[in-house]
Length: 288
Ligand SMILES: [Mn+2]
Image (cartoon, rainbow, N blue to C red; front, top):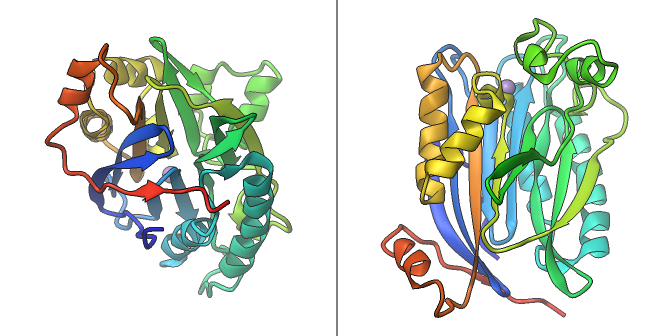
């Protein structure tokens, strides 16, 4: 397993081969145009892609997002779904404890969101185990349409659910920053959502913090994914679009494009297009 390295104020990309899939990924974490510090963080390991949006006084938000991702990075990718889910449950509790130990000089407790996807095996085929706590998001772009896989834990999401706001109204509502679940932030126990969904070649996963979705509506995000030919290009264009709109918050994205690891004769162009990228080839073998 690679050593876990936090991506912050940087863009990093590579390719992970996990089982029968080749995962072409790109992570970009940008401070934006307004904030002085970057409390977001991203982490990419073979078959494991996570982001976090920290909060708290002084540097505690930065420490919280980093602690969450480094703790969760101990999970095993390419394992059985249920085993990995149990592992993540335990690691979320451990992350919560670590975040609780962060000193804050103000009464704002350190906390963070966390979302992302871990490749697992379920019914003998590769699936994404998606986790979420807070208002960062995991989307999937599949067959030309963008679907938000996670549900925000936020006050405005509750207003959407109750029919008082449309998602587009919620995007710019002044209450949009109030989140109802987090790791740390004085909450007692982490209450994550988990979903699992098949990992199909051709799919693109997008993980992003609210610094992206606060600037760009879903239609625009979908258009950028539709017109990008690599994960690198998609990640760069998404961050550039948020910067062009003022980037009022830190902006973090991870784009993961799923390919078959063994090129087939019917897809030579697709395989060729990915050559020449900076790659960080890594193979995960099932420990069992
Ligand atoms: Mn944010």
